[in-house]
Image (cartoon, rainbow, N blue to C red; front, side, top):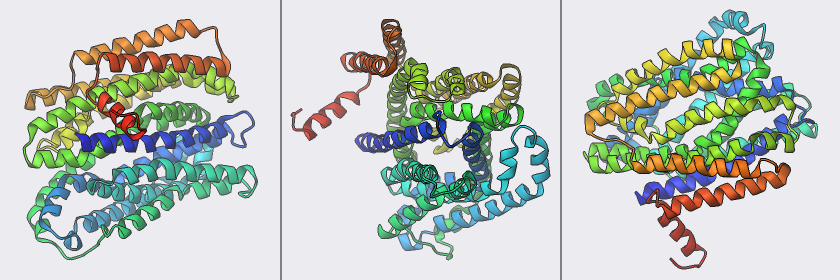
Length: 500
């Protein structure tokens, strides 16, 4: 657990450093004097959504194959003879070519569906293709690096590299080095190209990146299992990615790009709530794969419980802190008034993320087990629920409907997976401390809200935030809500010379 805890903490530090840069980026996109219109900011959100969908359809399940089967290859082959990454890359490239072909073939349908409310997306339609391509390459190399226990560097590149590059592009546009938004968005299309190059250089220097077209004995032995696994996991990943980004597509069609901008702001802020999950997943995946291989069920159960309470505490705290100051922050930082509409979109999206994080790494446990097919089955249920629910919720309730559909769908999705792991392995993530965490977070929020509702501006934000952090952090430590809190505090005290 100490290895997972260490990598999770370091990764989370990078994630939040990235969010600091992301906050600056969001401010520059949305402030009153911004050179970006809401429609132009919304287009960057559309690039992210459509790029991720292109990745989902083109990766052909090979991302999951990498972390599922890597332990078998690593145990039996030398690095130079490990052909898993080579075949994964070739299959992904073939998948991307197929996706591009369909993208060109159905351009007319895109024009028909989005031409009225989202004309700017139609204008830059083909520039989404390089964005999706480099996203695919980066994700492939990222998972490969996770298997080598290099999750810290990949999170650094994803969270710091991507957002810092975006910041540089925005600043260059502001000082007219980049003359127009047209040039900006075309450079933005290659955003993940730079981080992919850095990751390739790092892996080469670590003597970890090798390609070979020679079919290994492991591939000959496992290829049927790999194909079977990749087929169902591919469909599962597509389902999950569609479920994750369907709201942006529906809003783009029914509301327009300005609505996407408001939703993008809410989603970007929700990313703060979800951030701890990224570090936990990156650190736990290779450990879970090895634990299943060694049939170490006790370790898997421990990871499940620890991830649940730790991610729940983090998500509750971050959600409460943000929602406490949302309106004051929009006004105080002089954002455009329409972005106040993002508050209640954030409310429901944030609650959905709390449900997801509070359920622990259940998806990763199922993915890496012999029952990985169930991930596809539960994903199909998610897709069946979220697509019609999102469409009708957005149609009748507007942007808030997108957040509400997320909350309902992801609650159902996680309950199904929790129930499956309970039935199959008698594992569940919850305890009394789960309930205590929710009660303490709500109580601390209510106390700070009512005590500080007459204080506004920077003073109000600072005082309410400080009060909540002290109260909530105190509850976590005093009531020992997680066994990982004290080791982290003691480690910090040792590092700054205060003893244990």
